[in-house]
Length: 185
Image (spheres, rainbow, N blue to C red):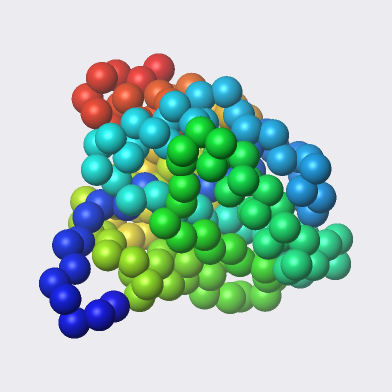
């Protein structure tokens, strides 16, 4: 960051598959990108609430040999293009390409992707939130002392037991509503 005073702000660290786009196990083809209902409205509302937006996504398909990092970047680019039509953009996009057994520092719930975002973006971590459809998303947030919201899109509806989430909501739009104090289910 440059020497000018940078204003820190809260960020919403948002999972990709099953949270912003339709869950399609091991998506490596950009043609498969399909925005979930409520995703655009939720992202817009988060911006209105003053949140920066950062995508944080585990992409074990790379480590498993199902697709390449270039494929992940192409899928992410397709998502960026689809959101741009609605005037929505992420401040940063981060992904973990490693196999779950790799023991890396970036695979959720490990904090590596958020730590990378902190190094690159004006993140006020104490006021930030993690939103996703898996316990690993909730674990990422809770491991850093953040609020964490489980959405019931994607794998969220199948998560059982106590996830530790601060809120369980229908979708990304409802997550933004919950953060705004408007309920959210």
